Image (cartoon, rainbow, N blue to C red; front, top):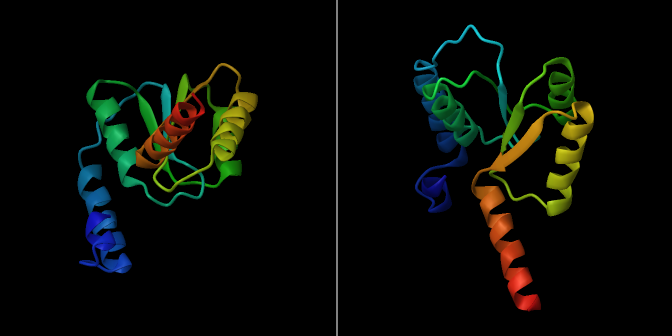
Length: 140
């Protein structure tokens, strides 16, 4: 991403490298026979999957049973949560999102299965949290 932002790579080069890297890391998936406890995905319509995929590998390295689905449309994500009793859903946000969009997907996921925790992470989420913190600071 940084090389693309600095003009050192084209967007197609960056996407090609990302696909290669996902394939390379995919060789190191840790198999588990257990029902997955955690669903790991990218925020709907956010096509940046590397962060979510690496988070998935970290969870697996701690012997946490996961299912990684990458980026899928909102409807498919909700269907998956309805049909499988995950303990938590972890969504990676790279592209900037609004608080309203994040709250909506959290509420939709909780409506799909009330017992599922919804956790967010990623650079897009951190940027949003920083902006919100600055706004709160300015109000004081």
